Length: 395
Image (cartoon, rainbow, N blue to C red):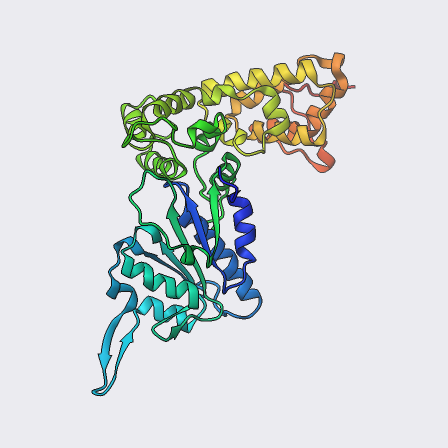
């Protein structure tokens, strides 16, 4: 880690507040998500410009113009000449002209893999914010990214060019990845299947390539996990680790070791939920989705875990705990709702306060199985259901 390293979270906060005239350079290994981070920053800047009235269209204003310099020739960036019969001038490419006419995020990727001629043109854009007399719009921001590892075939960057950037070494932390992977915002988050971030959380080594990895071997990275997630979900086997294709699809993205570990994790992930998790954290990320995905056999095991934890460790359900148990019960099949109710109230008057709290939060869900309304104030009619409720004795 270099002295100029910073997390993605910190980088984004700085970049969003950087003056438009200050160009930004990201250095990082491949697969970290440099282009994705630039896209996220540009989305935030778009909102800022809209709120200030600089752009009028939140959907199409402040576009991100992404150009890979390694794939460009000099004419692709400088443009082509035209003449009026007496003089010659260069007509800029359409994308560069747009960055001159309106606020844009101009992303010049793979700068140190460009030809010397293309790098010189980029030098003028970064240094003077213009190219052949065409000046960038005052609110256009320039970003660039390079692969910093010595393992890549790259050109040496001119110190004079490097000096014109706010240059940062991006350190993609596990916390950064988990925050992004679980975020459902279409402009900011990855919205990955919970299995992926939950697995990455078990060990940092699953997010970054091994230092002694064989050259050319498949290794895990934020980008490879994103690709694997998309592939397994599209194939319909993310929750079917026993499918013979599951391991082979993993292998092509994250390598042997990570593929074996991820498959084993997915096979046992639902059994990792405890009764305490459901009672205290059911509505938190991951717990509810895991419980809902579990088959009826595993859900029956979860019913036993919840009942055992409540009966042994809880004297009275708090409002938060009651809400969690109620939500869990609503996600169960009817027969398991009744089973859970019976087990939770098995202590009877020996734990009367617990029974009252269970009735307060969960009676409506159980009554719903039989189509019986709770009535006003949660009192309602008590049905005569053997082993569940008893109707009041006639006087």
